[in-house]
Image 1 (cartoon, rainbow, N blue to C red):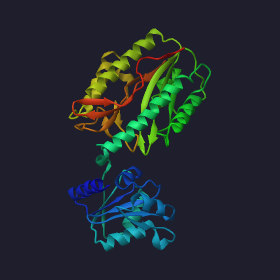
Image 2: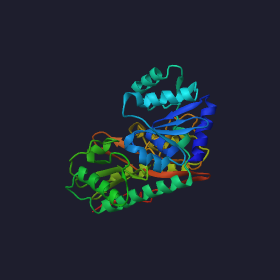
Image 3: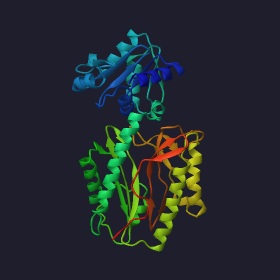
Image 4: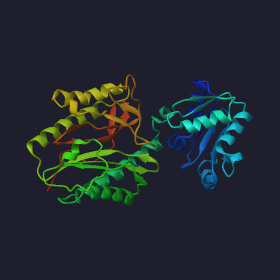
Length: 361
């Protein structure tokens, strides 16, 4: 964890901060290895402390004790988290402390400024420090992707007329857990027929699968904290002419989007490559979301492959999804998604499941 802490300290120095409170679970885990549900990292140029409560003292010591001093809070009002933070800020004579404004509630912020009136608390965003993955992280993401791939292969043997979308999702999640996933990466999406026009078709429904329908499945696994994300659309029975046409169109856009991913590419330009293919075919208004997003300790991370990404540039060993889709109200829709690693001369597709149109007979 030491190189990560060093990068955090460099970030603090560049932003004029003499301390930082890290509370977002993904960042807390990234900088310390601690996986408990309650805790705050207190970082200065020379100190690294993990504040947690009675429930996690032993776990914190096991997971982060080699790099962090473990401090217990709670048990009384005199030992609340904010009282402990106040004491640390005063002891180290800190003047300007960073906190994660995108995660910290107003109530927590109010408590901080009330308990530590002599210190300026400044919001800062740390997620950018996680965007480039190291080899260990890439290995864990590969494993999470492999689990999802195996689950997709399994579900093809389960899908049949009369089974509900809910049961398909349940079987996907059960299979991923049996294969070693900690949990699903997000709420599994299964959308068939007309519901395919809903990009995030939740909640899961008891709609039954029927012959001739597209079935879009968007799911992923979490393995040792790291996420995977895959979407595949299949047909139950034989695809009709329109289904084949739109599937080929989305596949062309998805393939072109993956090919456009490379270190040095501007995110919005990658989005445009895929989006233009769909727009030129007359379906641009039916592809209303971004082309993709970063994946790691969170299912949605930076960078974002969207038209509004401005001048964000891809870097080697970032991990992103490429997931164009078309959604037609009153007809249905489809999406195809891979998880890919950004490389110097292109990209590496981690998702191994076939992207050819599968007709389940």
